[in-house]
Amino acid sequence: MSKGAVVLLDCWANPFCLRAKIALAEKGVEYEARAENLFGGKSDLLLKSNPINKKVPTWPSPPLLPSRAYGTAKTRFWADFIDKKVFDAVCNIRKSKGEVPETAKNEFIEILKQLEGALGEKDFFGGDSFGFVHVIAIPLTCWFYAVEKFGGVKVENECPKFSAWMNKCMQRDTVARILPDPEKVYEFVIMLRNMFGIE
Amino acid sequence: MSKGAVVLLDCWANPFCLRAKIALAEKGVEYEARAENLFGGKSDLLLKSNPINKKVPTWPSPPLLPSRAYGTAKTRFWADFIDKKVFDAVCNIRKSKGEVPETAKNEFIEILKQLEGALGEKDFFGGDSFGFVHVIAIPLTCWFYAVEKFGGVKVENECPKFSAWMNKCMQRDTVARILPDPEKVYEFVIMLRNMFGIE
Image 1 (cartoon, rainbow over the protein chains, first blue to last red):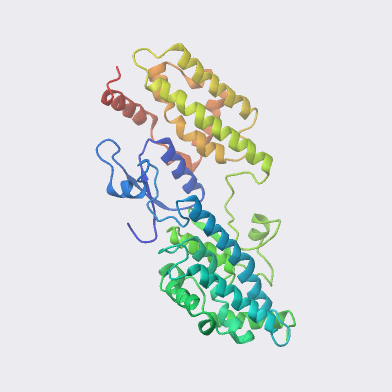
Image 2: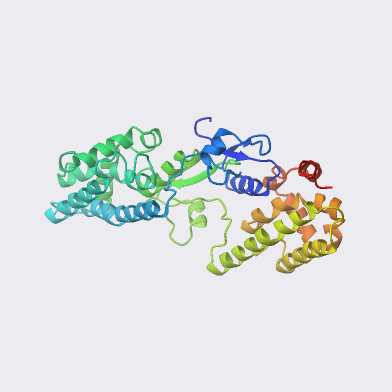
């Protein structure tokens, strides 16, 4: 599988495959359609990627959401928690006028500790692979350096397991090449604070 | 906008944009991130593509589903109708043993006439642009030549408006380059019938 390409396991005349290909083309998504021999013997990739019904069209890329309803529900719960809690806690600190109140710092740490509890002894939220919760959470972490500078909160000291998880995610190519440098984000926060007259 | 590229209107430090970019990268979708100046003046493309909240991330590509709930509900109704009715009607004809029964032919025509009624005097289902119903319906039409050959049903004569809609869709680049030649599909149907011992 070529790196960075959407692969579609395909049959040329199958209307369901044709639908997928037209929709991808309408959205401007490039893809590689790989012909399956549906009568002569399906590929190992198809059998592995779609073990239940073994049908095309199938995308062999790993799913971001778990396949079971309970796993999906937990994922959505934590994604919602991160959306509502972490984002607001970061904003409260970076927008503070004067010294950052202790309540704002404590709330930020408390929220990360709750996430640490959800992580438990695992490497990743909800199991052993990078998924939806990570896509939601990791972009907020490049703002944590600014939180440290303004609020004096060092995530590494307060929440070492959460910090280890951040470092593990940063080893992932899609994260490492997309997340901006936290120092650049810190400078951006200074610019924002100046722009909005926050001393 | 370069042809065939996913464009994302972006701000480099915005966590919501970062989420979108990590998810696209995880799925292997190539994209072009275009920087918006959120303080100096948003682009016309952003204002046109996301006129309600004017926020990034925004995809400027036209949506396949209508923006209003009523339009979406109608779209889903017709997509479901096509899924359940047209596909089965085509299968009934192409799998018929011996002469195709009149009931199977009449049912096929009746279903297309119902779609003609939904199309009305418009060029496209539900309005004046290519959308979700078209993505669902148009892949089935390359099987109609086989239906004609086996069932003696000429869609052009029976349902001229539906036929004109098919021709209009075929002028669309994403459809024209993806749909296979109906004669090739007809040969494929002959092969399938031989394989399954249908005379």
